[in-house]
Amino acid sequence: MSINSIGTVSLFVSDQQRAKKFYTETLGFELREDMPLYSGAPVRWIAVAPTGAQTELILYEPDENWAHYKQVIGKAQNISLNVTDLSGVYKDLKGKGVEFVQEPTEQPWGKFAMMVDSEGNQILLVEPHSGESG
Image (cartoon, rainbow, N blue to C red; front, side):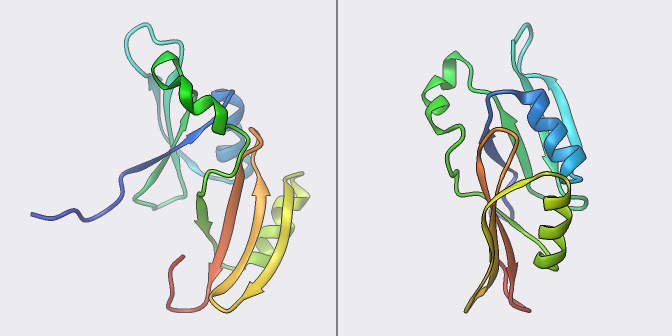
């Protein structure tokens, strides 16, 4: 028995439907789940992920139980997405109107850029050097 993968990572958002549209339509993620958080809940459990990825990104709108997370919406939430061909991804997303606060930059460990999602969250895009993972 062992822990063998990360199941989900929550990204706190102020508008779940807008965020869902951004991640599925702009970034091309799969919509894995979209259902009420619980019976009668005003918010939903929305899970998205890149095609074939194991880990899902939960687009979580903080409710009264998670109100303390409202303060992190629109701030860097330390989420990175690995990409291949960062230059191509950057050009494609810029063409779709995605804002970048850091253009692609070369580092010893690989390349990175920082984009802003529909909710103002800063998301790191990483192209690791061959054989490495970010």
